[in-house]
Each structure stands twice: as C-alpha cells, then as structure tokens.
Image (cartoon, rainbow, N blue to C red; front, side, top):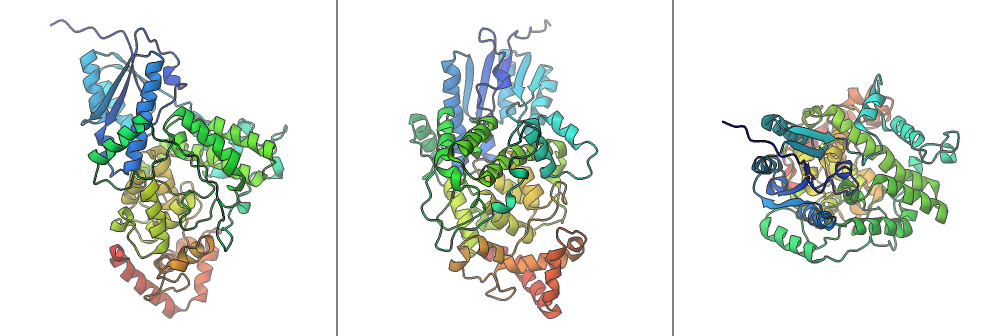
Length: 515
C-alpha cells in the first residue's frame, strides 16, 4: 500500500496563554504554506472545577486574538467548544490534513507539554517546540544558575537578573538606593480609619465577542464556581496596554507601602491587576518593568515602591517559572508534612464564619482575584495549618484564579504557601496566627472569633491551629534561626494551655466543614 505523502506546510499550535503576535512561534511563519490552529477545549475548563470568569477570560482573549491573526491574513483553523482534549483535537486535525511538522511554544503546563511530545512520537511527525522568549530568563539560564547551589533563594537570583538586564543598577552594577531589597518598607497596614479613596482599576466595556462568551459560559457551565457579573479583565492587547498605562499613572504611587494590606470591600487595593494579561502574554514583562521605571523618574516615586513591584515581575515571577520546570513532575506530588485532610467545602462557596476567609474567598468568587497576601497568608496559611492535602489546595488555586497557569500557580501554592516540598526554595513555612490577620486588616472586627484567644469556643481557628502547628513541629522550627523565635514564644504558654490548644485543634480539624 502506497504511503501517504505528508503535507509540506507546517502547523502552528497557539495555546490560550500564548496570545502574543510577536512570539518566536510566528516569526518565521509562511502564510503561503503554513497554518495556525487554536483550540477551545471543554476539557480545559473541567479537569479542575474552573471559575466562570477564568473560562470567560480565556475564551474571550482567544477569540479576540484569532481576529488579530485573521487581520494579518494568516490561515487559521479555530476550533470552538471541542468536547475532546486539546491534544485529541490536535491529533484529529493532524491526521485529517496529513501534517508532518508541528510548531509550538513550550506549554506552561507540564502535562500538556508531555502530551504534545507523546503525540508527535505516536504520529511520527516533526515537533518543533520553541523556548518561550516572553520571559527574561530562559530555562537553560536558570538551570545554569542552579548548578552547584546548596540553597535556591529568590534574593540571589533576583540580584543576578537586575545586573544581567541592567535594571535599577548604576554603571558599576550596584543597586539604586544602596540596597537590593526594600521589602521592609512595603508591609504597612492601611490606616485605622481605612484605606480611603483608591483609584479603581481600568474598566473595559464588553464588546460583542466578550458578551457572547459571557452568555456561552453562563449557559454551558452553570454549576461552576464564581460569578460573571463583575467581569472586567483586559481581553485584547490594546486593553492590556491601557491597563498598564492606567496603573502606572494612577495606582503605582501607593502600591508599595500598602501591598500587603487587606480591608473589607477592597478587593484590589493599589495592586496592578496585570497578572492575567501578563500570563496570557497580552503584555510582555519587559514593557511592564520599563513603564514602571519611566513612571518612577517622571513622578519621583519612592524607590521602595518601584523596587517592590519590579521584584515581583523580574524576580519572583521568573524564579517560580524556573523552579516549576526544574522540579516537575515531583513538585505536583510533594507532601512534606503528609497532610491528608480534604479541602473544606466552603472554599468553593465562601460560607464560613471566619471573616478573613469569608472576605478573601467571597471576592475570589466575585472577581476570580485576590492579591498575594490574601492568597498566601489567608487562604494558603489556613490550608497549611489545617493540614489539607496539598493536591486539593493546588487544584483549587488553579481553578479559582483567572491568572492561574500551572507554571506560576503550583510553585506559589505547593512550594510557598503549603511548604509541601519541605523548603526547596523557601527558608521557612509561611504561617501566622489570627494576630497577623488583625494587624494587616479589619477582618477581625466583624468576626465571631477572637484572634487573641488560643482555644475554646471564641478562639480564632487560625490562632489555635497556628499554635498547634508549632507544638507539633517544634523540633523543625527550633533547628532553624529563621523560625527559632516562633517556637520560643511557646515557652510563654503553660503546659496545660498547650494541651488545651492541642485538644481544641483536634476538634477543629475533625469538623473543618463547620467552621
């Protein structure tokens, strides 16, 4: 039987978080012989129970990007609402068109990368999986940085990135302002009377495409968590640029000092709300950093504010991506403390009596967003103290936040919030009692629980579980200079009270759904 000749053209796969017309995948695209494929797969919205706003954001951004592709005159196959997975849909198309050469940017999810590589092997086609040059640091550069290091810490990687890319350094490579890190200046709570007037984030009117997507998502995924009523995310390159310009003009000035602060009915604070646009590749991190530096000089902004923001983009965002690819697939399986409790049902509803959790989860359900301290020190802190199975927590974060792509979500959740990898790239578990929540927010004022009470009916569950965690892991904490002071505070608590804390913690852990 005569073997069928493969098509001479190449098929370019563009994924929903790769919406960049300047990406390396499209630089040598030949519109005469090549073809682009984009796939909307229902499977992507269902393998975790995805927030409606996240589904809508991806679909709207993808459909707008498809229009931009068509404007360029590039041949495009756009498959809507496929019941198959991305790879299964891709396989059908490759076989139908007899494609012999597949081009794509490396996916931001390990499972998808593995599946595409396996498909190419199965179909015996050439696979050209390109480095994602959206990032400052390539995977190879990160591997080279890691080599022979005993400890992997953000600070040293961040300094290297600053020097290598000549950002906030003088002509001799020294840091602006004489120090690399101004984190201590960026941890203030709002004033006691509250945050005052905060300029709202940029607003975007839903066009016909977005309106159609919102109707489709509500109809197709009625039982999924979250609301679409407050949907206001940039879904095009132009909107993303507007959001960036608005942030540096009106909101950046107060971002630094209050970036860790929390307050009821203040879902965004002074934060940039640019993470979804960055992670969909509608914005490039270089233009974000450049815009912030320009604003710093133009408006004489505090260096601590500018450095704090740039550290998140140039430092932490790049660092966790490097760690993700370095440690997968092990990172997804890690469970250092062997925690096994199921995720409380109210993580999906916000219906809990803990005011801090109710507010953080409530705004997450409304917008698909919470800022980094709400994620780390409220929902993440509780999940660690409550001994919840890391995989269930990670699935929740991936499902519920509009900016969650696995390369950035998993290291932040498993590695930082849950300490599931035993401190592979963090020096201590990030835990705190209700006292921290009280200091950084106004949540405790409306709560039935009291942050200063360690056990009993009035005790804040965060406080009880915090002390229980320290009692249980006292040896580990006392072995490290970074955490020794935390267990030193146990000496101020009598043995009898410590026993009562342990007993009350067992009671809480046995009925997490009822808090």
